[in-house]
Length: 579
Image (tube, rainbow, N blue to C red):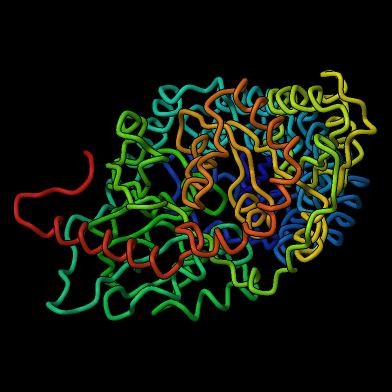
């Protein structure tokens, strides 16, 4: 997630990963991005350049260089030295906050960012950065209020507006109409700024040639996008579809290398501004350009606003409308977006026949064997949740507590990266205690290795899903480890994700239509310990042959959808997408 640092008008951009994002970071020069900025941003850039030579801004440039090397400890030490010299200069506190966030020290990050804002309360970027940390800490009302304060200062700042839109997916109270309205404003701003550099003509495909498809993402590696993409890319027939991957971040890990090997070409755009990236993609003759980020970290919707490809679509890495007029399609399924919900999107909805997502992470091939559950009395079960703290809202814990009050011998295991923090642990305990569940019924764990995380499922009988933002990757991995998830269906694409995944896995009877049904189903499953034990032993084989894990079948569906869209768009008199 981008974290910006402004000194008056100085705008030194640090790319700082959040708790769900890749752990690498990139610091790109201002000149690389200048032409992609709206007019107000260009003015700020010019003023920042004039101010940059004066102290303490020269020291900030050295901090930027350190931060770009992903050494948060070293940068934090330098930031502290800077603070000792300039204690009333907010930039040092801002950098320190970003370093703490990069180290997943969210309590310390919030304190440093709050200190910076006490010094400079009008820093809109700083407010946006703090709101992101509040989200990671699960302080969603504070995050929402802070984003709104930042938006009042800069109503046309698409970075702040985009992060605000992303946050709305965590709130039941955020209506689809509100989200659509704000997303449309976001898309209109990007589209207007990009208009002078928008392409209106494209190179036609040669007869008999493979369809050229480009995928744009900053998450091509050890990230849910990579996990859902890997085996699908490997299964696509290169004689039909020629895949070019356009990474928008500099991250590189073992999964990145495997993804790179599955494509026809690998062309990084993280060092290019939006106009140059769009020119590169246009020159490559891409016919269908697919956005895998939406409004998440490292997104390049400014590239899509320039229309480098005649057909553009959103898929996989986002779960709401982009609001961008130049985004023609959204790739979904019947469960994720029923016909009655199409008006939630500016894009035309295209549905795959079975599922919009197919999990295919190679690491599951070496996953631990499923261990039989020990015999337990009815109701003496361990519920689990391995999701990010920002999804475990007071409303979620209140519903889980209703289940646990019905089952006095049941326990709850929660594990995520934020629970390494004492403050986060106290927060979760307080939420349960408020609802009558004692702390000694909770097992709270911080982050572990991937293997240890998978093995932790041996201690869990069933997963209780979060809402309105349910599990995705964690749901699939739990299924693989023999642990089913009970989910609550909602009214938006993201809130229907659990339902879509479980139906694709052949577990439609694990979807609750409402909160009362959720409680009743959780209790009935918990007392059937023999049934849970039997399902645990059968579940891996069951889901392995289901559409949720069948990469070959999914690749065929995806290929056919792309070919059909390209064919229809090529017919005279037909337009693609909504305008």
